[in-house]
Image (cartoon, rainbow over all chains, first blue to last red; front, top):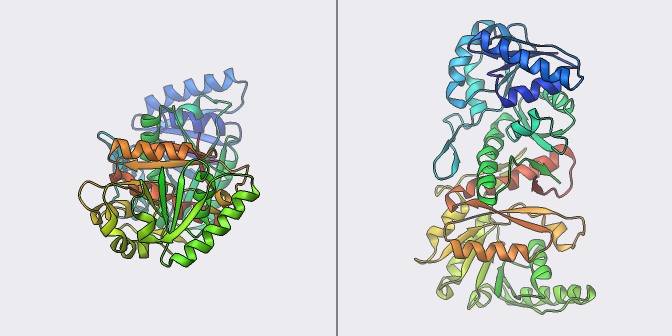
Length: 217
Length: 217
């Protein structure tokens, strides 16, 4: 499967790339292709150090998205609209994955409900007719995922309206051993899982926990 | 500590009563005192069967609340306002604990954000000046708590504005071995933890999990 990780030069992009590279074609996207190329080389060195196969490639966001099966938006909420404008000409039937969280930090982290109800629903409204957004991966501690922390275990809560798209993302989540996918319902419920990110950040800050994740027992 | 569990004749009330009875004075409240008395007798028999000390007593809600240190509202959202009206004459400096969740069930369970932002904030607005609400216990699977399920483990997320009140509830949570209290911030963030209940119910329904609880790892 061809997976474009847009804004994928950060820790969460690295985590996805390292875990999926043996089984899937990973295309890291960035605003500037040079940055994505240099970062992908670094990811490939890490892969080699772990004795893993696979080759991660870097592109500008639009080139990364073109012809992908799945596009993951590992982008701050503020930049999502701009990136979608850039890739819109190459959007056709890719599944769009949103781990995007609209939040601010004051004394505490706070979820800011967008007018559409959630970032995922807002992104759905920006896309051409017939494309599907799946909301997922909001609770994945990126530092633990990209360091291949062997003690890391995390449930990934997944919202989406279209069965096949959701199943593809559930399967991709299963491909990462430390993650367990949980179906949480339709996209209309995405605000609940987006708001888990500020919740976890507040829990970390107030209870001296480092890079916490969530498990449903 | 004197703990009034209003609407406490159900499973969650039983769970609190059984776990706290050895260390605290538990006063089960109900609309009719007879129901609370009969139910308390049943709880006392269970206590005796487990070889535990303590005596749980049943009262009408107002009598249970009078002179308590802590009042826990184990009441459906729709009935909270009516119960607060009943107990208002005896409210003075009790700490009010809200595990209340405003939600509806259609095809999925859905959180219904109240005008005040959360049920906990709405309850705070109903109380006399100077009283404090602490939001807690929304994610506790009542069936597992009241059956004293030895495998049960659950994190209790706690919001509140007043440090001493919050610390009292954190200590009470520590008194129940299977629960871990996590400070989640001020009452303004309570909607996030209230919405965990419909989230867990949807997860249970869609992923065939029974009475799930949440742990932060």
